[in-house]
Length: 312
Length: 268
Image 1 (cartoon, each protein chain N blue to C red):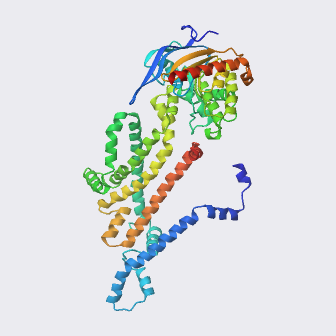
Image 2 (spheres, each protein chain N blue to C red):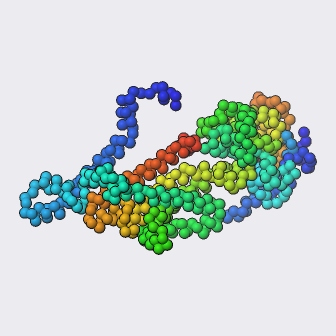
């Protein structure tokens, strides 16, 4: 640690080192490829309609005119990246965030039910896992239900949840959060069961020789041992939670949220709006997963687990 | 010093009579232990030696109440093994250090004290005392992965000692370590035993280790696991590894080897 601090290489060579060894170049390369393919796809998919338009207007057109026209349609089949970026810029940065036309407003609506559902799903998942690990009959009775719960398509369940909860007066955030919870508890339960069972027999026998109670064994051994497994589950759960929140917004009559933007966009053929909502949703998902990953690295480092998990 | 075969007396820490243990497996019963008779007196250093599968670890686990015997009687300080475990009568050292990687050395050593609800100041004091005893002072805040295998096993011995049990059960604690580290730890363990006056039951498959450390060597043979010889040694308490060159040492090592070979012939 101290040697690293005293023998720091000059700034320029450190930057070059990071460029050479870091993720920047591979990530940038893939981005470039995706954007290129996207542009080619946009020209190709939008050209049929554009050629028809040219012919209806009886105008002559060159290839370069065709390309520039396909990339600036109002309602293209596939909008070009710069059109989506312009829309995102307009709806994220140029609008008042309380406005119904602001994507920040819609993203925050989705985010709040995502987080509520994620927290509820995590609690439920951990509780189920603790129960399953300690009570054999719970494993036998609950596990088949837990697994089959995930085989039912969420699109089929979501409208029912929204309608049924709406009938008893629950509207807005809670029904969407419940759908998020429904999707997110599963990875938490599965990873947590595995984590709680990860201590070796020797480590459990050790607690037995101290006459540790089940509770003490849980707190001092099983829970700390399960944390690396839990975080793996949490990363999947938070992304699933976002999907749940968006799906939950589809049947609500498209009032607010990224799901609502997707639905409204498809009603009116606003493909640019759909794509910008999609991009914002994936940025949100990436951000949420990164935050969980960041907390994971901090927690595991604090527990002294970061290095040992790397070597074992 | 009394012989281990003397019938139960006030000093008997472990008293085992006609003990057998059979594991039921899908392939039929496995006779892990058969008609074991053994008395361990206070202050003894008793080693179980034998080839893999002779039930030496199983016998230690029965004493620790980690396995239940099928028949026969066993008492620890005059109590059932379960009661002795509940009274925290023994410290157990496993084949691997089994330190919890998220706890630093001090917190690993004081884990049993934390389970017992002993307060923080006392825990800190005991950690200092027992880490000093195993020569690990200065490593309190290190995590297990900072330590070598030998140091980890020393930390696990400190953990077994820190609640001051009279009986120490050790299951091949140095089996995974190299010869040089093992020799060194054998000397340290002997020193620790004479300082603390603990009763130690020690499982090993190394003849020199058993002869060097023990007051009584229990030679076991497999299928079914049984005791075929108990050898008493009379080395001075302040012996060093040099005694391994002496005729007395070689004679005892020879008798242990003979016993092990006999057990093997019976098996073939």
